[in-house]
Image 1 (cartoon, rainbow, N blue to C red):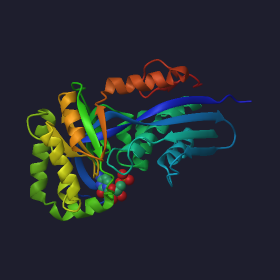
Image 2: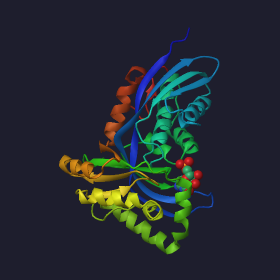
Image 3: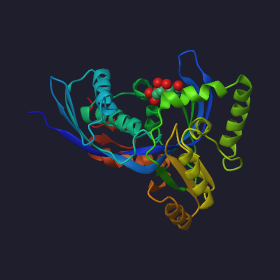
Image 4: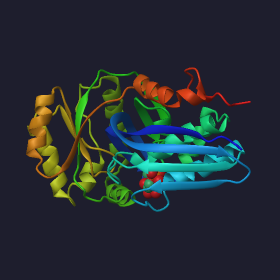
Length: 311
Ligand code: C5P
């Protein structure tokens, strides 16, 4: 009988530290400039793989999320590896969903990284990136982690050096924002003149982070419809945030703080809103976390992690 190989992973959330939408592309997606950052807020995923002739993918997920990306990720990875077997997954959600925090994308990327290690096959980074892109625009970032610039659809990724440890407060107001609708609302405001300005201003943001205030273009499309989000941003600033922004197309917001006292002040001002004190997770910590989680099944400290069962 084939032995079952198991792993328990943390799938981290992301913030967009800056996000500019330049315009609509011929393929229907929008051209972006963004800075991604992994943070300590995380879902938990257990994956068990048993080699076998038949493929069966099962997911125990307490919220019964329809068409969950992790199931699609498992099928895509098995097909790409040209292998079969039983995949049983258990997902515990802690990252608020539909909030711009990338929870579903991170869960899916975790499956893409872990399954080849458990199955004893190699999927090279370009192949993993291709699969990630099929699952969603944010999935590829979680193959990299840390701080990174995303351009194009958000899937062309360029790592930035690890910055200093930063603390943030993430607020999930529970307001539902539809991402396609947010893009539609933003589109009429996108002119070719504003595109040039955005490119230069984004570039200076990346070169000299902290010099200019970052921005998220979705705020101007989403805040008018949900004034409570603008009010949260104001509260985060008033409590002493150096930056307060919405992440992705919302509705979560975050404030960056130099010390814990200001985070406590911000927490008190937010009333019943769900809020999570978090820290940035650098790329070296992100990889360290992965290597530890896969230690039993992988060889050395390579990226992406390689299987010790590979022939
Ligand atoms: O790629 P993902 O599934 O995350 O995208 C969700 C939706 O967001 C797309 O169907 C599209 O409407 C919009 N989108 C976009 N431009 C991007 C990313 C997403 O228009 N760069």
